[in-house]
Image 1 (cartoon, rainbow, N blue to C red):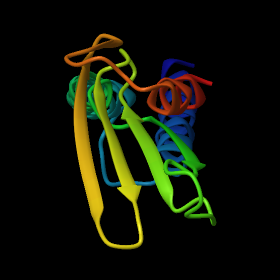
Image 2: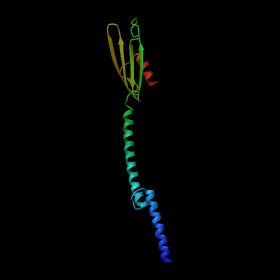
Image 3: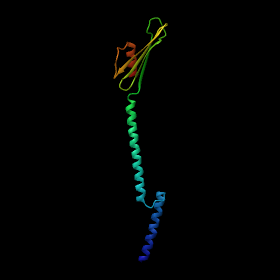
Image 4: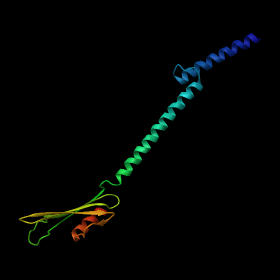
Length: 139
């Protein structure tokens, strides 16, 4: 009786190991070994995810200072020149810092002015057209 029971248990163990090899799909000996390997791979993926999170945070920090908003106003700065050849362009980041470029065109000359903005405040007084360009950039 004991011999039959031992034989039956050996057959059951063989079936269990065959099923285990089929489940794991590798030459690993048991589920514990497979689980340990799987845990190591999960920890590696988590480490890479942390690296990606840090990289994204660094990009987000730099993105705030990138030019994100722009506004352009074309106008006729000098009476009688026609064609709205003068232009004011505002280039701003998320905080409202940036530059306002103004080009005033005449038949004989062109003048270019650059004014800096820090947190929405200009270093020099803005002309009405420049104010409109900044407002257009802010939306």
